[in-house]
Image (tube, rainbow, N blue to C red; front, side):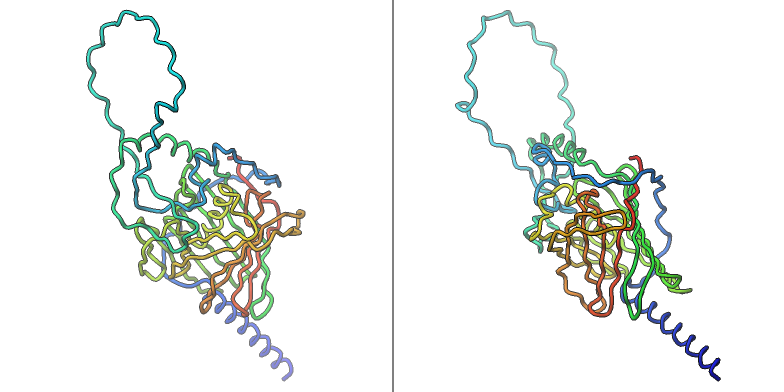
Length: 377
């Protein structure tokens, strides 16, 4: 009888843990339908990223690069470029004496006028001080001829930001949800030309595995997601879901659609978007500052605000790392998570710790366990 009671207790405890893990997965990670996983960009990681002070950007680069403004550029719409004021003749340098007259050669035969190059669409910036701003639905406005001179400067600004090479971050996973949770997690930032992927994978023991992938383009506005896919397995139960980012709307995991917001990110791309934002605008990463990002999670698109609350030294397995601690100001609704992120400027502004809280129900803590691995370029 004692043996039977022991076996019954063991089965009951096992079932309780399975149900708790399933509830954790459903509450935190959502569900949905999807198919055809995004094909991974293949890269080779060859070196450890060593800590170094971030390079100081020159004033010229800050003036030229769109990211140097305290703004997050919009996803769509266009606006006319402002023309530079014309200098007055009185402000110019003195006119040199007129040289002696020389014979005037015969003019060359007339040539056909050169073709006018098409001017790419210019996009206005989304002010960081206006968290309620959304995409301007006004149709594109015809650009003045003077706007053509802005095209080379815009191209140079895009080239001015050197996107980091493909990077892999490995984390230890710990936490509590009706009992201790242990596991591992990995984040990969992959790029090929102007294409990118951000891939996250987390595993807690042999019960829960979750993978997410964001894919899109690298632009002067940072990351522009196009597709997001997720897969979650709890024992033998697997769920898949996806989101699609279009120019004017976002298709959510449940199939509903919402209007696109400027700079919108998914739950995977947001970490790299913050890295881009603080690399191009390091003045924003100061205690007391705040940044906000429109974020798509499951079947909702909300604006998330992160407050930089403190500067903190983390003791990681490979040594101390100076970080800035970011806390989400967004209130949790139902089973929503509230994240906290620790950004390390000495490691290319990458997140070295990510803490996910669900009210008083529990938390999951990801801590970088080794220096990030990077590709050669």
